[in-house]
Image 1 (tube, one colour):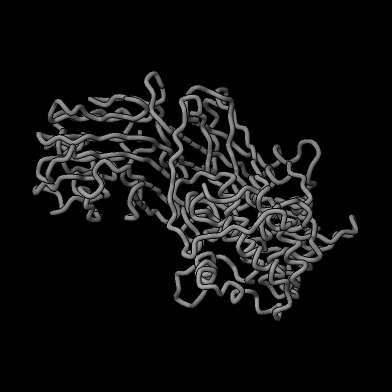
Image 2 (tube, one colour; image 1 turned 90 degrees about the horizontal axis):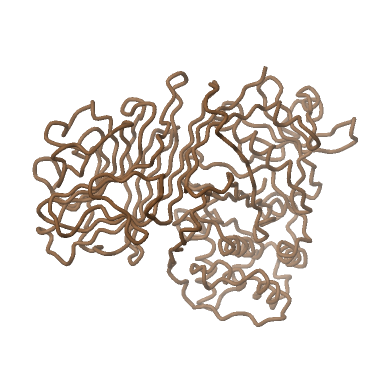
Length: 603
């Protein structure tokens, strides 16, 4: 028999907080007010306010010791009301606690609504929190305002100084993520009106601290010194995988998997930009709590679509996966060239790496999603194999290779006419490039070029890195990066010089500003190119990769400029600093979505 993948998935998206919503529970002084959470009144001292998500969140599974991975992104404001540092307190915290947790008595002030004098430091608390502490309590705090990670205690096990008084009234964005593989809890924060940012991390084994299920929420408190605490938005997602499956509550759960493939990243530079959305029936609430299973045989062998190959056939087709047949590495495994006698067809076989913690999940997702896609610019998935616990995917073989194999690989470099045609073809769907595999979920162990967001760092727009929200503008950014790769022959993710942090876009923009734009052109073309077209493509690339998403062109405008039906834009001589405009959604837009999208260099 073949394994099934059982999982719990919790997704929360709250761009605002409205009264009457049944997915958030308010405790103490907390209340919704004009789309935000007000944690305390400014007319009373020593107040505590808390909110919690109405459903419990699975943290770990006792039978397999599998632990959830989660990400929480929230925006908040703490306002000192113009007071001096000694006249305001105490702070705001995001926490995980046992189901049924209530506000402890006498927990105002520095206890942040989570502890009191009898529970100040005890393993029985079963609490993990990240605190934004605006007042230094001499009994347990460091001597400075700080952001801290706390485990079962009001004292932080790890903290970073936080000069909060500089950011009073400014909207702060915070990201908290936990990696189940590395057991790393990380925190980053930044501000809408400042370039300042901070980070903090600590290794924690949640199985030793929290119960199997917990509540997730926020708490804020004041003392005799008052400040205002507001939560403006909140997004949270967690996933807990299990090898065994227990049938319970399956009658109330619906799972639908959908895919969005925006035009702008359909075939970018041998990459496939997939925005994987977990969709469900529209509901008034802004969350979804799901339990489900992927039964591999049942899911893949219904109806038409990719056929199942035996492992024996694929071994024969690839000469036992010999090194001579290896085309490259990508995603979760290597890709091999093969030949199926029965079909009289050359194929490309992606072999999922053995021992990959995410291999089965990625394999299931990839087959389910890609098998439903038909597009001239996507490499077609024609089959699969999962014999004996091996996971393999079979694609149509691209005899000419993907675009990136000619730009960065050992294949003959493309001449200028082909490069310009490829860039334009990406936009109007006449080129044929491809990728072996759906983009991966990024983990820390995958290397320095990845982030907690799903995607290849060099192709991600700065606002997507900050907010996690993909858009047409972020797709245009990705095209701009690929346009620069086509012109320069350099990978966006490779540093321009050894030990340099300067990326491709910044480097080309600097040369543009100094009047030396064409010095960045790929030397392998031996200066055999149309200067007017080259300059046009590179400036369009910079325009598309503009740090301000509002100043990027539409795909239509890009095509018009590349066809010289529209003038080449004049860009600033210096690369602008990224700015962000938070989208304020109406109450009618509280639909739950998974906003991570992925972009991976094709192999």
